[in-house]
Length: 142
Image 1: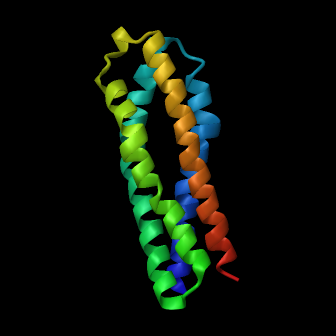
Image 2: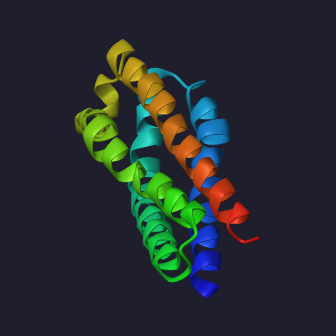
């Protein structure tokens, strides 16, 4: 079914980007001094936001549509994992994002670094949700 395959594709793209951020980009930027750390995170976040947000929605909606047509619980479960990124982001991560975006890099210090370390741990949850969705969607293909 095309919708089931689309859900897997969207989830895989989302998860690949999330894992790259979790495993490569964020650990590398944490090696920077506080000002450059924040200065690198701010535009990176702005660029990643529309990509990850749209992939989470598209993967979730495609998974729900595929589940409605095929009735496979794995598609619904994968869709729910994808869509769970939204409340996690809006309720838990967004307040941190707003504080970090409002801080000028010239004012970065221990507080902004601590927020970015916390942000990274929370972003790891997005990577885990996406990974679970990919596994469920892939399993649902067979």
